[in-house]
Length: 167
Image (cartoon, rainbow, N blue to C red):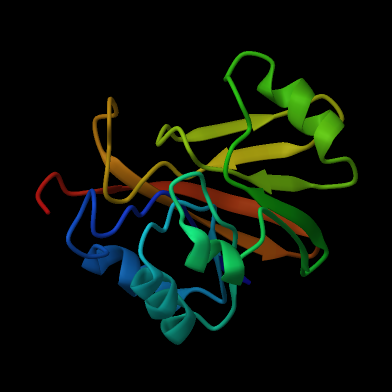
């Protein structure tokens, strides 16, 4: 099972449109996970129309219309992996312990908000993944998203993809 992990698209505030490379990744994925800050309802509509399966949550920059269609957190089982999705996890310091306590029983937690890619494992084995942002690199050298594979109840081949600097 091919996964696409993304967050913080911020269309149209940080970019006029979703990058073409990200849309190609949406088309290639079996499941698309978006960890919030869509900003625009049209972006959610676009992902829903293109994704085979979409798991998404709202973020702090998402208004009432997006919040009416999405939850603050999501939990799904994907080919034996128990995955959670949330936008914010708080400060980097102590994140692993906080998330392990807040989300017991998960194998993977996908989050966003910081626009900073993150891949760590908490005590007890919870894998924490932040795909960064495909539209707003902030203090990072590149705009990013992640892909991963799920097979036999295992998450593997987690890759951070860098998008070109141009829009």
